[in-house]
Length: 310
Image (cartoon, rainbow, N blue to C red; front, side):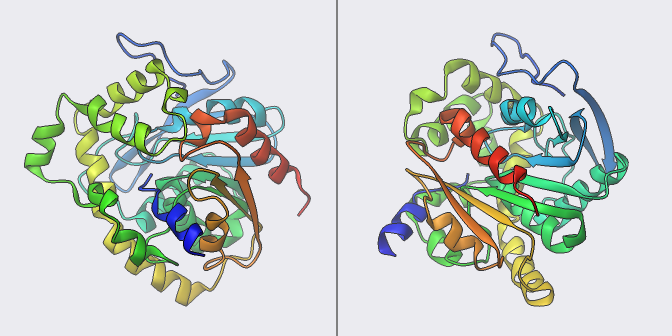
């Protein structure tokens, strides 16, 4: 257990792919995808949609945007309707001052599904996306058929208090006007810290990828919104405990994907605190950035789980 905890604590956090000036874009979404904007509680959520068949919604985390899911989307769109939002305040979604509690962002995602006239969907998430995904699944259990959660903890759940004590998690409380002045114009330096320290192989996150996301996080208001995502963790912890107590554990099948060099099997241990039907999956030779470090293995794991009959 100690070894698993060390692995757990080593993890800190965490349209179409839009070409940005001076950088080659990350892998684009298939040309058949389209984008649309969905209004939700004072935010405009940017959404990529494509494919045909049972729906699946993919939620990204910090350091990425919905662009990270392009390889998954290309695979699943063969037989799924694939929905890929940018979370409130991230990517090409708008940057409101409020609403960053994950319970509230889950409502954003419900509004996205409503706008697309989707009643039920599979759910695939990573990093902060796990937190929004859990809040979505627990508040709308009849709308989520399966849940794939990848390599990040849930505030207030399991070993969260021990995780918060780790010195490497200084960024959870790194925010405020002076912090924003320090990071402004240095977004690439800030993001490189996460790509380098939380990956098994930093070179797997190539220059084009780093530049692409640095440019997105340099957009006006983007880092302020990202800091607000972390600032909400305290309220998220309170909300998650209350939701678990009121709603009980998730009953839908859950795939807990841990990176070998990060959460590993500890990801399943964490999710068993909130779900009754958890399958563990470890992606070999990867750190936290599963889609950048081991995309083929990660896509295969997601596909295999979603193909299982209910």
